[in-house]
Length: 206
Image (tube, rainbow, N blue to C red; front, side, top):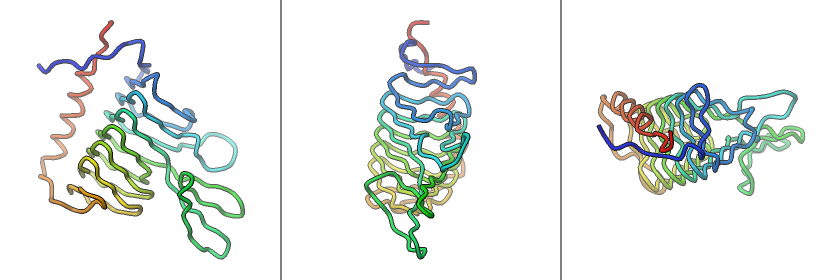
């Protein structure tokens, strides 16, 4: 059996569904964030659930499936566009992505599937990330990006806005480009790795 990955029990909050969230992570708007279960949010991660569509009540802004890992220092915020009068499309890079209509800001939700690992210090503004996806460290996943099932993004990759990363594809570089097809066994391999990582992630002071 591999060596456990120990963490201090006082540093993490564990939910009834097995999610483990570092007290050193910043979770803004937690009522608008869904964690599917057995997901780990590491120290220094920032998840912006407070960027939501206008209107009363709660709205799901960011949802993560089961057995996900958000690495140390990751930033996750939902994607959107600014639509001005006359239907002219623009982007404002000074703030998180959004859509304006008659003076209102509308933020579009981000959905992340099961068995997704996101490496340290990666910034994610994707629209959708599928199941069994691995994203390396120090990456930038641009606005409205769609990453399909069983895809992988190498370390230090910059994925431009509106990119579609196909299923079973490896992307790398800046800007990120297709490198090679991944084997059909990727789903089983990634699922095994994510479950194994969660099992190894154990409190030091039980």
